[in-house]
Image (cartoon, rainbow, N blue to C red; front, side, top):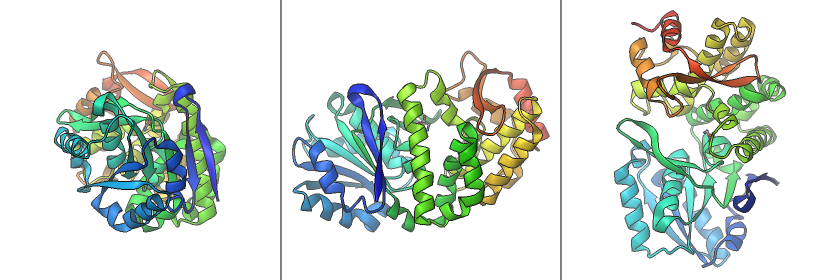
Length: 370
Ligand code: GLY
């Protein structure tokens, strides 16, 4: 069973299909989007070893020739060097502007392949087949594509919407528990930022989502995608409301930067701690009730995710260094910091003029060193 959620972007509108068994249906679902019956599939070694044969069989059964481009797993692929290598492979395959690229993997593959599609021969179409919870509920939807540079993550990129997203819930069965929890941080984000009812449902059923119980998983991924689709349709290029999707990300990015953007602290884990901190900062500023921050923190911790600086390997962190990373954030403007703060659970808002001194004081109170 599957459901299709529309991302209403006029001429660039597309569907995100969420359900079980979609890889087996990929050939039939993708063929109508192809002018030539061939597809360049960008994947990483881990995903390709687990699921590549099934995807290839499905595409071939629909008469679609598969051109696989399998890269090494890991964030380092999202670099100028990784991008150049991928573009060279696309050129070797003689892809033209009528061809389509499929991003088959997690956020790294989606961001890299999407950005390559955005710039290859001035832009060709791409589709997303996300294989992690994080990619299914967040990064595969909405057209943000990017690579990392020395100054920070995702600082070079483009908005380039996919033509179709196929989120096959079955592939999550092979996802390591740690990655599942990291993706869950982005699931809970949707409740915290704008849907108190969904947050309450997650308090009761989050363990079923993490256990990959099919109905709970389908409901959770479906609700997240629906919320993301609505927000992206309203604010594609993040001039306003889309920034709410960055709840927990300003604190989280700083922690990721300090821990080296790697296995020490996964993106979702950083976002988990960042969300708890954003709620505590909101409470400290008198914006929301202390009990809301406690409740948000409890729900995050219940999923086995970090909520404090002390929970993160690498602690103690220096407040000045964390604030310096925040000033590099894409959302920072004119030296003022931007945070997503909350008036309550499900009531996040964009605070564009946050004083760095107040953030520094909060970090010291959270256990950071000067
Ligand atoms: N991941 C945040 C966004 O897509 O806007």
